[in-house]
Amino acid sequence: MADYQHGVYGVMKDAVIANVGEASTAVVAIGTLPVHLVADSGNLVGVPLPMPDASAKSKYGYSPDWEKFTLCEVMQAFLGGSSGNIGGLYCINVLDPATHKAATDTEAEVTFTDGVGTIKDDLAILSTISVTGITAANTSAVYDWSTGVTTITAVGATGAKTVTYRRVTPANVTAAQVIAALEAVDDLYPLQNVVPNMLIAPGWSDTASVYAALVSKAQAINDHFFGFVLADIPTSASADTLEEAIAWKAANGYTSKFSKVCWPCVKDTSGDIYHLSTLFAREMVRNDAVHDGVPFETASNVAVADGGICLADGTTVKMYLETGNDLNEYGISTAIAWGGRVRLWGGHTAGFINGSSSLEASAIFDTNIRMLCYVINGFQTRWIDSIDQPMTLALKETILFNEQALLDGLVAQGALVGTPTVVFTPTNNTTTDIVQGVFTWDMSMTPTPQFKTARAIVAYTTDGFDAYISEGE
Image (cartoon, rainbow, N blue to C red; front, top):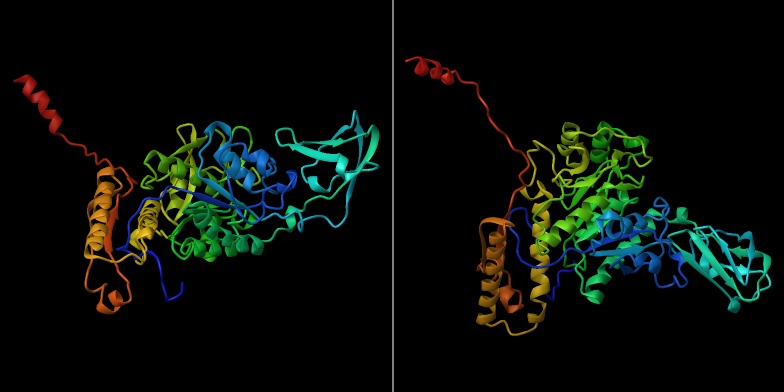
């Protein structure tokens, strides 16, 4: 961020923050969508695409092959299945059919009846489909994501015809391209008035360079806003056991307090395998909605499936409460089998290490850092209309009063504890600053801690034997 500032800004410290706010949860997912399966995919690459409901599957393309098309997993988690429509989701697609495509055409023999034929290939780029002997103007194709079938209409075609098309190559998408696409996160607020405060990239965030880029972007969205990252540790040979996952996290620097790091995966009863970053994000959004957008309830201990816990290849992983705790101790969130259900397990950030002498208080719980982000982002969106207006004493006091009232309201809601404060001090408002039009309000707040551990202390006593004596008397 440049030294020169014009607007409303937020600064985060370990124990004190300088702002307050109201911002609902908006998840931005970065990855690949099968946009080649829609008629016009030219405007669907590298831009935030709103996902309001299941109609997004037809609008942007959908495939059950989540390994190739990583954002389809997120679409299904947020918009489909028994979970219903969660909302608050925006996707940035990196797959570009104009560049991520095979070098040569694919040919298929298709039988047409009354000008209609079908193919079943979810890699076929619809815009490249042609039928021998039929002009492009008389040829069209529509993909049905629910069946995986592409219906080709070729006016005048009958009998066997050669259909030619180019196939998309999702394997050619690189981590560098995913990282570059993060710049599009900055488009959401100025263009759609949405503060992007949660970033995920399932299928990509287990690459160290992508994780680092996500964390960096989360601390400087539009050079103003703060977000929270949900990422995964790979479940491949390098980290297919609990011990290897712990070692991998440390070796690859997955330790930012602005992130939650997860391992392994979860399988539902239909056999679909989800990254835990996807499921934690979904349940965080659901919890936030219950609390009017205030992120003070963790998604840990939420039942998410009746299937099982597994690696990305489907191999079963036995995860119970104590083994889950072994991961939590090192700042890894996971899932456990408990009470006949699969539950998300772990309320810490990736910056948490049990017993660490350098552990920051704000890094202990995911709700701590998310509340700080919530407060900072809201302050900036609320007071932007006052920028460049005269800073009267009345306006200074109005901001002071309103921000204090908002913090007190968060206490009443249960999101904060104690007595949060908002002050306008000479130390942070020097004459030099005021001459330059720079004004600072200092705020301190304590997010409500999570109920992580319940202990009952039970002791044996012989006092009860007195009953025998009293009864005998």
